[in-house]
Image 1: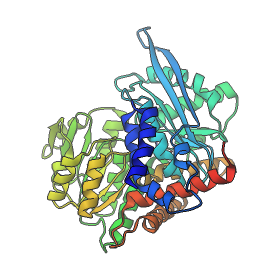
Image 2: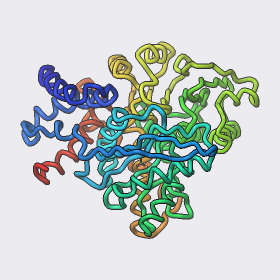
Image 3: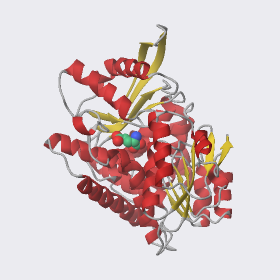
Image 4: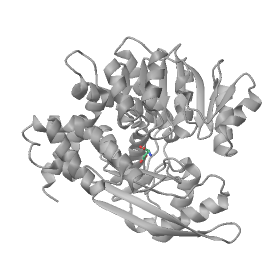
Length: 447
Ligand code: GLU
């Protein structure tokens, strides 16, 4: 089996050798899915995984825009249309200076499995740009988004490809992108998700990724007759996912002691309560400030410049910032301090070494493609509401979200439970995600 996986990865590396994040994401899937393929006659010998690692289409384009001083800038825009076997391409747009083809291909590849796990009819895609919204005025962000959509519009559509937000793309950016799409195409359709509530957005969509991650943690803890209440929780990040993960943990009676951004983390030993979280949300969403400003208002808290929060003692950790933010040493620190459960809110925040260490120690570990699927699942619900031209209540959407997260958890158990009863959620998520897409690909023939 090892030889089979190695031969497959050698082929992937030959073609994508300069794309480390993409190779990392494929390796994780290959390790778990290739043994499954080998033992299931209907998938064996059909090169299905090899077909799945090649994007159906990769679009790269120039985005030229003018800043407030009249200077012209050029960024690179992308859309990776990875797999449309079970529905239109679906996945977020990321605006961040680190964005390149490797990062977006890893995200698009993960998205295929994640979207399949939601059980909703969505294929996988991802896009974005190396544009950095940080430090830009609202007008500059608007001009960039409009320029980006001038090209992207011809590649997307409500039945073709439905982008959404991700790092650096929130409600403000989705508004500008939607406005330009509507103007060019002269149609008001659900071509993007994460829209404002008065123009086609779904209730709970802003909360969904963070809430869903905590709902998933609840299901995991329940298998050990445990729950979130009374637990000390470490969260990284302070963007959309981290904010609503923190909100849900607080609502469930957990104590959140850290949040972070790229400059460092804050530690509040008394816990971040609802009022303090409201301060962080205003700081990040409206003032667009830095997390270090928290300690200016809450002086009992400390700011740890340039550090990650994984050395803080906790029961549960939610990495909600970005890829590869939690390495082997961090994993060891967490477990030494008694952490029993790590649930990814971001996409691929744990390195392969860290994941292997969690598995070896048999602690509860959930990969983002399962535990953060609540965001895209609620995007799927937004698409349904747009098609039906109706709007579900907050309670209705939240109930559906809870049901979807619980079903994803069950699928992980079905495919990931090992002989000793330990659930390998990585294996479970990869195989469950694979099966649905592979069946559709087989039915549709070699295309
Ligand atoms: N960017 C989010 C994710 O990683 C959401 C994608 C969407 O809603 O389409 O799943």
